Image (cartoon, rainbow, N blue to C red; front, side, top):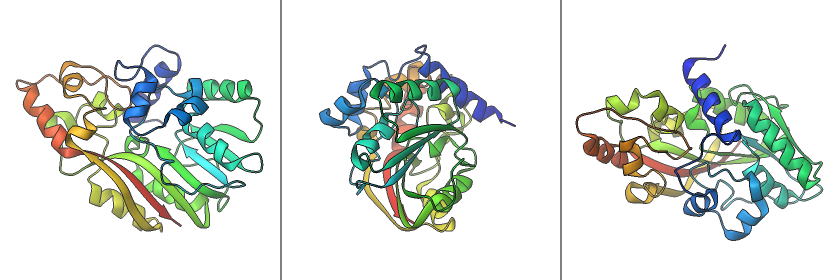
Length: 273
């Protein structure tokens, strides 16, 4: 049974897939460039780029031809198609998403490209519809922070990875606790803000699941992150990093924005089973 948070997340991303909601009020390519995608990657992704995410999980990865790659929360297939270009015709890519509208869009995008070694499965990242020890590389972009059971997500990553397999995720974490009013806001949760965990807790969850050799090759904080999470947007009810609307009714929104910007960070986390 879906909880309130999961239902809110699913409905929001369904609206993005249907074209009823966009991210950050900016063109999708502009958002993607801000969070680390190259012109070449944007050209490869084409209309699968919906301007979502908080980083480029494929940056600094060693995805090679012939590998099997799993994309958690694959959306319209942006990162999945970029991974497909790396694994080539001898490799395979699996995308998992819980939203029917996103899955439909991703499958349409695959059909337009005429590719057969990519598939998009319906499922939850806390209980992946993927065989154990069957994946070489797991990627994810600003999705794990949306889960209400993050330890289960990391356990699933460890389960599906082959021994020695790797993962690379981009995500939002906290350097310190959020203001209570923001942390309680469901729309902030959908937008990757109040669902974020403290960075030490986030790393502990990964380690406890059996994942190892953790490294953080990139972290963006403060003003860097606010290129995507605009203070004006947060305070006025605009869009946040993952395309959601965050409406905050407080007496001093500027102070809350300042506190949020000091607490949030966008990281890339790499590791292996």
